[in-house]
Image (cartoon, rainbow, N blue to C red; front, side, top):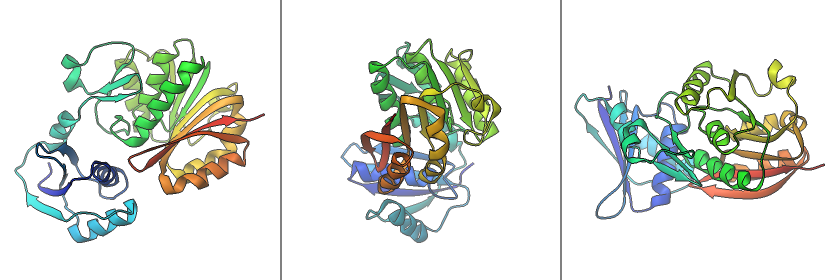
Length: 292
């Protein structure tokens, strides 16, 4: 149970989301729980809960370095012994991304059930759509599947499995493989596939990149989705290209906006053309086309 809290207050929505993302996904240690609220009188409040709280001055410097933005003063307070992880999960509202609504189990009673309603509880694996990278990928999946019926799909670094679930919901006849290098994430993804009624349609694998016998034996993919980080995406460029069919669509995220040119360059060198570049709360989502 967390015993101390750090608080940041800013009038800037984009800065609030960038700081929230950095605290959760870019810094070690990450908070035991984190909440982001819009104050009634305007502005945004971030509360980060820790067992072993980091130095506030050092943390502020790290946040400024990661975001490239001016970071507000950080307040610190002791808190009572409560289950802040559960409280943080309950505070996550449903998220709309394209046609999809991503929600936790605490919102089942107020979210309409349907083919584009996806249940994902915040937990051990990344991917609840509250992060700009996941939201960007969901919007890209929504956009590209309206224009084409893909038949063979690969998600690399599936985390919670939310992107594979979105693909399965929009492409009921597609063959889908979802991989992650972390065995626990694969187990979480498989549980989420079952919860969302697509467990029999998605093959989940523990694999480092495309290094798996099932992937090596697989026919070419016409849609590949990878929401990882910039450096591993660059390293994977030479492997992803040959695994895709000509004219296939590639969706990449997990890329800070300043890192995007290097990622784009790596994939252009492997025969991809940039189709679209979306920027959400400091993060890039790229849509590319596999050229002949």
